Each structure stands twice: as C-alpha cells, then as structure tokens.
Length: 590
Image (cartoon, rainbow, N blue to C red; front, side):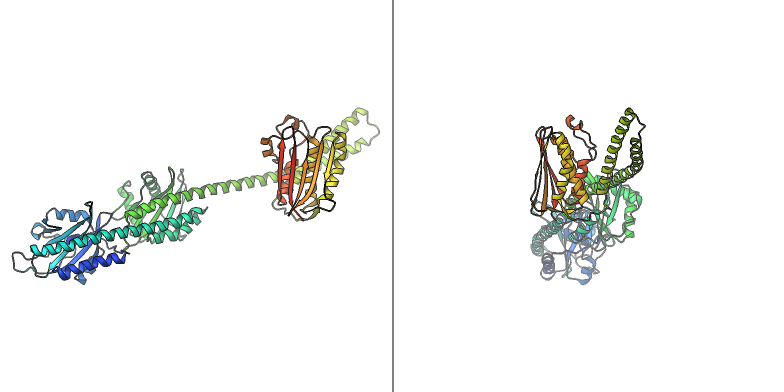
C-alpha cells in the first residue's frame, strides 16, 4: 500500500466538514478501483503542519478503517520519492529499493502473495501521484495498490491512471480552497461576534462569557481559558466555565514568557506532543505535555493578547483526541481576535482602575465628611460655653471700657466661629449618603422674601438695591425647607457681599416646565473663567484679590452645590471679571 497514507507515528484527526468536497474525492478514489484496475485507492491532502491527511479510501473496508484520517509527515514521502521512477504524474518505487522492515514502519500493508511473474506486484511496491497546484506547491497525493491482475501497470494502464491523477489534483485543489474559504467564513463570524459583544464589556468575566460560544464554535474547540497579566507580572486565569485552571507557578511563568514573545513576533502557535513552543527548554516542554495529558487535551492553540506594543495575556483553545489539526487560517484568525480581546482587556483594566479610584475617592470623601462633622461637633460645645460666659461678663457693671471692647471683639470672633461650624455641620449633613433627603413641597417665594428681609439692612448700608422678580402665586419646589433656605441665603448674601456700593442685585423666581428656576444676578467684581470651574469646591476662594479681601471661608457655594445636587437639581454660573455674575439654580418643581 502507498506508505505516505499509513505513516508510523500518525494521528487520526479527520473531520472535514465540507461534505461535497469529501464526496468528490471519494468518487474519484472509487473510480480508480472500478475502472483503472486497482483494488485500493487513497487520496490525501497536505496540511499546514507539514503532514498528509487521508481524506478518501476506496476498495477495502479494512484499509478504510485503518487509513481514514491518518496523518503522515511529508518528509517521509519525500524520502521515498527520491528513489522513485517517473511514470508521468505518478512515481513508482519498487520494493527492491526498500528495506525489508519498511512494512512495519508504515503500519498497514496488504496481505498478498506476489504472482510468479517478472512484473509481479509486491506488497511493498509504492505507486503514488504527488498532486501539485499551478504554483508547484504540493497539495495532496493519490496512492493506489493491489492491481487486479497482480502486475505492475504497463504504458496503457499508466495513461489511464494519469487521467485519474489529474482529476484528483483538480478536486484536491478545489476541496482545499473550499475548506479554506469555509474556515475564513467561520473565523470571520467568530471575530464579528466577539467584536460586537465581548469588546463592549468592562469586566474580564463578561468578556469571557460573551466570547466563549463564539470562540468554541468558531474554532471547533473543546475548551478555553484566558490568562491576563500586567507589566509587573500580576494577573489572573479565567476559564470558560468558571472552573479553576490549576496551571501551577511554573506553567504560569512559561505561559507569560511565551505570550510576550509570541506577541512580539505576532504569531499564534500550536502546542501538541509533536509541536511545542520553540523558545522553551526540554524540561518546560515536558511539563506542558504532562499538563495536557492530565486534563485530557490532545492539542491547544496558544494566542497572545495585546494592544499596541503591550502584551496583556494569552488565550488558550483546546482540542481533544480525534479532533482536526489546527490550520494556518485558524492561527491567523486567532491572532486577529487576540488584538480585539486585547483591546477589550485594556478597556476593562482601565475601567477597573477608574472604578477603584472612584471608590477610594468616595471613601476619602466619606472620611473627610466624618472628620469635618466630628471636629465641628467638638468645637461647638466649648464655643457655646464661651459665648455664654461672654454674655455673663458683658452684663457685669464693674467692667472698664477697654475690657468691654475686648469682650465685644471676642464675641464677634466666637459668633463667626459658630457660623463656620454651622456651615461645616450642614456640609457634612448634605454630603452624607446615609442621610437621605425626604422631599416635600417648599414655597420658594416665601423663602426668597424672608432672605431678602434678613439681608436688607446689609444692602442698605452699602447703598445697594435688591430687585425681586417673582410671581404672585407660590412657587413650589420639592425638597427640604431648611436646606433650600440656606441655598437662597448663601446666593443672595454673596451677591450683596461682592457688589460695590450703589449697585443692584436682582433675584428672580419662576417655573419652567418641570423645574423651578432661582436666579441671583449681581453687578459685582465678577469671576474669572478658571475660578468658575472651581466654584463649589470646599474652602475654595477666588484668586481675585478683591474677592479674597472679603471675609469668608469658601463654604457657602460648596453648600449650595451639594444641596442642589442632593435635590436632583443643577446649577449654572455665568460671570465675567468686572461685569458681575449670575447664578441659576434649577430644582424639581413641587
């Protein structure tokens, strides 16, 4: 029998999914057995891993069972063909040029007794036609055995055989082209599904979940896992079904180093008993193969994952015994998917870092709020005592004028500290997520009137005019009355504080759709564009020297911003240096 079809250390991995191509090859093989006068014919195709795979066997059930799907190294065929006679498309190697042990080496040999004739066919005679494409690339073989008449074919029979060899050549080329096209379509569909779904995810678990089916189906794989790592070597292993992949530290290190090299070379590689990574030692290769055997895996496709110059991990797709060998088109498609998954991993890692940063900032903000509340409470109690004793001293008739002046100064300082503490306590309250807002309808018309009445004295002292433009009917907003009162008070008092003598402060209140709009406009010193962006930050004071000269802590607008946000509203600021400022607060209408 033609020995390239029955190689010694061979595998059985035939599962050609293209039925029309497989059937066409089978028909040609059967035609050879029926018309060309040979009992057995076998057609093999060349694979990208340097092996011939038997795709069609005709003439003998025993031969078909033994040979179908076998894979034989091409170099074994090449060595035999060096000894061959040229019979047109066929090459013939008589058994006399072979070692007596060749039959055992090749596996299956027909059990026949040669006839008594000078041209008798011997069981170890080799007759095969290498099938080349138009570029001279070997694409397969047609091998025949057991001539019906028991003799080596003559000139006329060789011409018939060459006709079938040409048909086989064309069919093999078409079949391989169809297979390659089918692989490309299958890989493209897998890549499309991964790009559409997995690359939009922001967690590694979701990336695995959304790419699992596409990868397993698209690559006809039995299983998969994904290893990620960063520049410091920290990483995780994620399996398709959530089960732990126990690689061990040595295998993890080998996989990481191999992935970085594969990414640098832009290649996906196959690992099996006859194909291991080139950059590893013999001992490392032994560890890998022992691991494959321990999990029942015949081979795997190892693909680096990355984005730009950075390797971010590797993807492993596995196949069991009997599955087809990995093809070059599958390796190419896997590398393309490695780029897509690499970008997805980079996005997920960036999101994870940002999420962690947000959590840390939230924790810091919570700690800051707790610290402010604690400090404010601790200061308020002794300040209350100080204020009480100051009032007692001021009522004493025996104090001199100088002492009374000092007491009044102390009282003013203490009252200012009380206001700061009250602001800190309110800031802590409105920023506390565990202190929920219980909204009720609040009449902002009434709050604006009360605020303007309270600040009217300060406005008169500066010669300011406060214009109030509000509808006659109540203007209801949903919220907390005390907090919204502070919003009105802070905005109006700021406008009065920063407007020079003789200026005007305008307060407007109206309803626009589902919102209530409070507008406070002044003719003051204005705010620079850079400072507007930072307004509302705790303790921030304007960089304008004129503003800094005014007393204040920078908490007023911070309280306004937090209260408005807590109420589900928003704030808008328009300002220009020397031209005044306009603050608008939008709140849900009641």
